[in-house]
Amino acid sequence: MTGRATAILEAIFGESFRRNFDVRLWDGTTLPSTNGHSDFTFVVNTPGALRSAFTPPLERNAGNAFISGIIDIEGNLPEAIAQINAASSSRTAFQKAQIALALLRLPREARPEPPGAADLHGKSHSRERDRAAISYHYDHPVAFYRAFLDPDMVYSCAYYDDAVTNLDDAQQAKLDYILRKLRLEPGMSFLDIGCGWGSLVIAAAKRGAQALGITLSRVQHDEANRRIEELGLGERARVEFRDYRDLRDLTFDRIASIGMVEHVGRKLLPRYYASAYAALRPGGLFLNHGIAEQSPGRKAPPNPFIERYVFPDGDLVAVADSLAIAERHGFEVRDVENLREHYARTLRAWVDNLERNREEAIAQAGEAAYRVWRLYMAGSAVSFDNASIGIYQSLLARPDSGGKVMIPPTRRDLYLSSRA
Image (cartoon, rainbow, N blue to C red; front, side, top):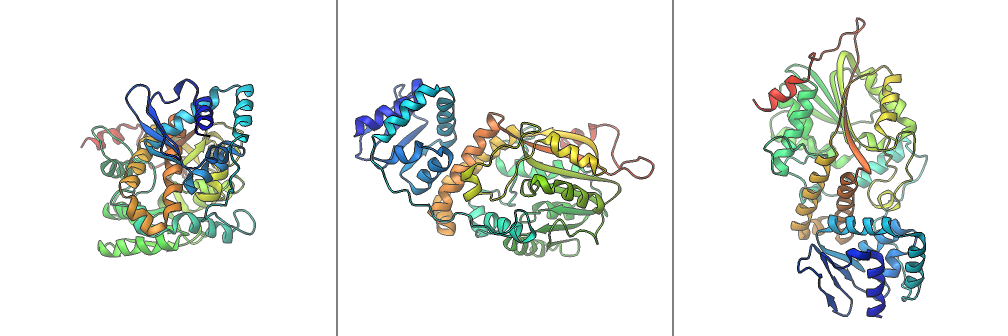
């Protein structure tokens, strides 16, 4: 049986089999890398594990096998995923059929659904279902997120500015970069849509703005307000439990939305942009930051693993399609920047932190959640590396009645400020 499993792995990986990685089978058999260097160890913990992991639907079954632990990767998980993806894309239809037949000769194992899958009800992107989806993703204990985030709990792509070499500094550089793009000044009113645990709201308040954050996560709401009070910023900052569709009574000089647009859904993007436009004063700026599909005009099928275990109802929309909707609702596009290489680096730093703090993460959220997030973040790093997805910051303006916008004539201030 071990020989059959080894042959299947060799067929799956092709020429890269064991070149830079070891293999360990359920009976303790170890096959070392052929070049004396190992980036990771591919672990097969039961005789039927490969059949469970590599038969269709592949994304769901491979994810389930990893969550349950019958397949494991020790070491560089992003590199392992990249090698598996590269090998799969190079296999012909005939080779894939041969692999499928070989897998069927392995023992069949029961495939119990791993614990913790999302179970949402009601109409997609209704208020109630959106609250449930946000709660599913964000309402783990705060200490679980602390196991992989930076000390300020910034949960989105970092910005590795010149001379920045670590995650903590890169996240501070990102907060600074966003507020410089918005040209936020003391006394301005500022809104953060989907504010997380309050990092950007706090940064804006420290710069003298009157800052409001909104979220649909009770845990984020409570933690953000706790942090605000602890820092003595209660007079200039607060976070409310509020839907982006409920901004009719509010207006702001500046608005940001960082990593929230992925939750909106393409059918509700017109409502999202219309709501932000109505809440922005004439002449003001809106920075929208979100992950995007890289193929305009096409809706990519949802990833069943991510849909069930990470981002239920998430929807990635190509930046061209999203900006076209923003323009139809009155916004003027002033700047667009893709930071996907920065996000790949951020995700690798998160995976490293999560692995280093494995025991704490499991104590807070359980073994299954630890394995889900490790796989999700490692796989996402690979997707940003290979340009399957992008991460865009789009600076949008609401011109006043005379066409004026509160923005300098060039970008020069962004880069001069970063070196000041």
